[in-house]
Image 1 (cartoon, rainbow, N blue to C red):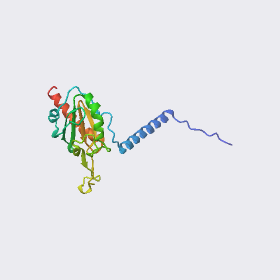
Image 2 (cartoon, rainbow, N blue to C red):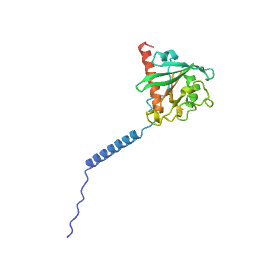
Image 3 (cartoon, helix red, strand yellow):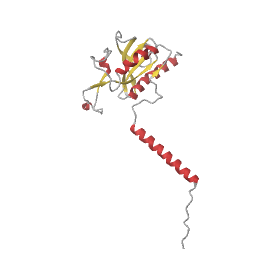
Image 4 (cartoon, rainbow, N blue to C red):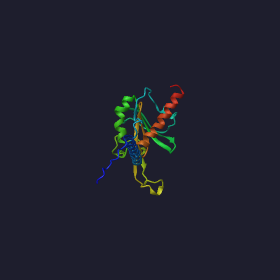
Length: 203
């Protein structure tokens, strides 16, 4: 005589709980994998083009932590009014910065963007004979290593000094870094110091 087979009922509340647990674990695994892979793209919270009503000059950067050591001739830099090379001190040590000044934020964006893109990033044009504005071209070059801090591993090849740039008000800031995010963070260190300075004096 056959006995009827009883099919166990699934508790809907328990089932929903299991689904939530699985979904949460999947999200955590995805986040961990994404973080492990990393990304050279800057997060959206770190802006690259920032308007500002103030017209900045090199003295503003000097009093805000930048050590300006070299003045560039901007005769052949379209619509620029001034340009300087220097550095700021960071937790990782001194980081180079090139500051190009324009008459307004609009000019910095219109005339400064393409030329800043040309000399930053992995595909930067940093050779004297090829770059549009060769003034200070050597400062846009940096010795490349074999991926370690050991000087013996340095390849002897020169690569771009600036991985990216930020336009702040009327200034185009090209900042040292191996990756775009590194450069943008250096730029923002100077911008933060600049903002703190003017906040302190009520500017």
